Length: 105
Image (cartoon, rainbow, N blue to C red; front, side, top):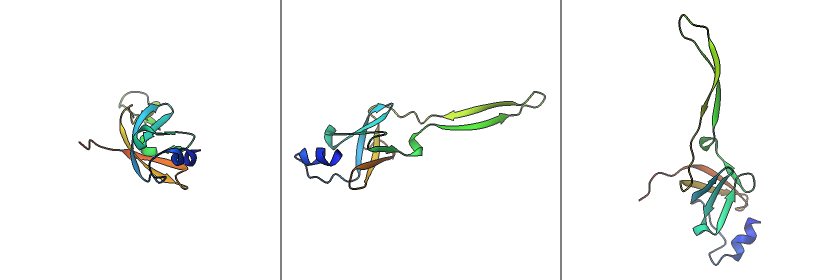
């Protein structure tokens, strides 16, 4: 488990909130602690709704034409090498990818 990986690191066992790097988008996988820890969606990583696709049912009405029903999908377009803010929970066993991090250079 993640706690065992932290103990094996030469760094302190407490990592805390971090800026991670997206290394995979399906499933979302984030690298923290200089690449020594990988957080994978569905295992120890939850991804906030801000970073997930959103779907909306809609009806498009154009005067003089029949209504068109459909779905609008908004994709946050998370990219590999993008920075995200991750926060630990449950003694750093579970993490949440909260949001993107803008350019910090």
